[in-house]
Structure formats: structure tokens, C-alpha cells
Length: 183
Length: 260
Image (cartoon, rainbow over all chains, first blue to last red):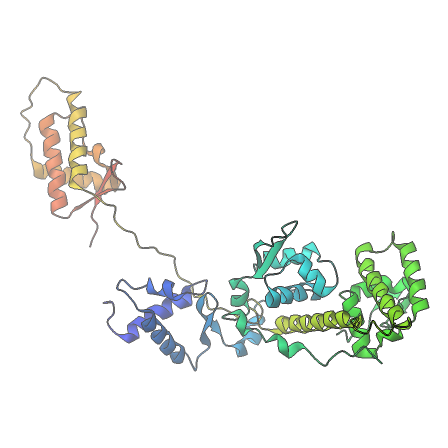
């Protein structure tokens, strides 16, 4: 195949790379597919077209935090789940609440998390989030004891189908009616 | 918010009642510790579900409960119980402040409930955010990422090779050959073409040979070594051989140039 021959072939190269890549591909990754220089705007245009090409098909091209990937459309997850009947155990409320605090209030220390939840942070909870590569330590707060500052990772965004933290549901949605404590 | 009734047994009796107020029977404490994520969670539940007014707390009961817990501290989960006790103590403090007559000139004092309300609201928001994140589709659960199979291949670049390296290798062959010089000039018929075939045949058998292996410096005299070298150059020129070297001064390899 002669390179840069036509748009159809360029899209085919991108498609083959995206379908076989175990991780999302960034624009830089995809530029490396071609021997000649490839402008990012050209790539974006090609990806846009590719996305439309797959419009009525089983896979969709989505953009997440670390790049682009093909994934099965949501309506097939019911069927695909039957291939792996071993249902993944749910994370506990403690894990999810800790994750939510790190996601919305990052970077936070263990102390910040305890302040919001009103209970001590179980080391097990932190370990589960670190092992899943959803959070990591991004630094230390310059106070006595130099506690670690936790933040969510790009992998967390990838796994939740998000491009950035801004795609998370806005926090304002969650504050319900005022709490009245007086008579 | 917890909607499902508890399913626990205390002293053999089914215990399914969620608390109605802040008084927790000592026997039920461990059950509640598991059901709620902490005192803020319990307090939020009581306020939202039972319209608990925190000024309306039974102080005597709470104080008694407090003392019982302190007695039982060694038996129950100290850390978690401690969080609940702190909350009880804080509520009692808030209420006692309200019971005391306020001097008229200290009007600016901050409402002691304000901080508690702020914490409750923040916790509730996080709690709902956690539920939202939990419900979002995730890779490995509801999102299946495409992963067509392909054999990982990487582009192999032929090693850099210069004529100087080849000349240097040749000089080494000659140098070694000089150690085995016999004072006998052979009259053997030397044919570059013959050597070319010889080399091709050897490479067919061995596929890949080191450059120096093609020269028998012990047996062959310099004229034969020269012919052998010429044969290699000729084969390379005709594109029948591929000569490669990974790095300068590293061994030079010779192999058949299959197709291409």
C-alpha cells in the first residue's frame, strides 16, 4: 500500500491500529503509524470520519483521558456479560465514598478524607484504590508529618469512559435540601 | 441512604430495627457500626428519615450510653465506637450551650450547629457522588473494549555497517593468517567463482555465519584467503549475501539474502 494514497486507506490504518491496541491510542501514537508527517488536525478529521463510518455498527470510537479506543456499544453489555458469568464483587461504600472524595476534592490527604467522612480511613480501602490504579500519590502536604496527597489517575478516567474530571457529574447536583437543625 | 432493614441477630433474637434516635442499645452497637459508614452517616439518616432534631436529643440517655460504652471499650471496635462517642459528645455540647442562658452582650457568638450542618451537607454530597460513580459504566464491568488479535511485530532496522568495518575485519583475518604462514607457495587453482559457491553452500547449511568463520586461517594460505574475501565481496555485490554488524567492532555476520 502506498502511503498517504487516499483517505480511505489512512482511515483503514487507524482502524486496524485502534482495533488491535490493548490501550487507548493518543494522537501522538497514531501519528507514529505513518512514515510521513501527519498533522494533528488531519488525524482528528480522519478520526471524526472513522467515528461516523462505525455509526450503525457494533463498536463505537470513543475518546477517553489517554486517547481513542473502540468499545462495544452499551446495548451489547448485557450479552457480553454472559461470557464472564463471574460477577465482579462490588466495592464497599467506604471505598466508593473515599474515591468520590479524592475525585471531587483532590489532591487530598488521608486526614481530609477522615474529616469529610467522620471516620478513620481503613488502610484496606486505600490499598484497593491504589491497586486498581484509580488513585495515586501526587505529593506531600508541607505540614508536620508531610502526609501524602492523593489524586485520581488517567486510568480512572479511562475506566469510567471520561475524558477529564470535568465530565464527572457536577457536585452541585448532589446537595439536596438544606438541613434545618433548629425548632 | 440505607433502605434495607438490618438482618442481624443479637442474643439469638432477630434484630432488624434501624435506630430511631441517637440512643443505641449497647448490644446493637456493633450491628450499627457495620450498617453505617460512621456517625455522620447515622446522624444524616436520623435527620432525613426520622426528622431528628438535634436539639431534641435525650441527654440523660445519651450520657448513660456514653458511660456504658466507655466501660465496654475493651470489647468493641474502639476506633469506630470512638467516632460515635465523639459525635454524641459534640451534640450534647451543642445542646448544653442552648440550655444555658445567653448573656445579652454576647450575641455575635456563632451558632454551634453551623459547623455540624456544613459537615453533614458535605458528607451527604460526597455520599451521593459515590453512589453516582458506583452506577457509572466501567471498563471490565459494563464497557467492553475492542481487542482484536494481532501478532505483535516491530519494525526491524538493519544494523549500520560501514566499509571500514569490513576492511578492518579483513585485516584481522590477514593478521591471524600470518601467524600460520607456511613457507610453501601453493599452486592450487583458485577460483573466485568456486569460492562463491562454496560459501553459498556453507551458508545454506548454517544459515548464519560469522565473517571470520568463512576463513580457515590455519589451513589456507594468504592467496586463498584473498580469493575467499573477493568471493564474499562478489556475492554481496550480486545481492546474494547479506552482511550485518550490530555495532562497530562487534562480530560481522554473513547470511544468505533470501528473496527481496
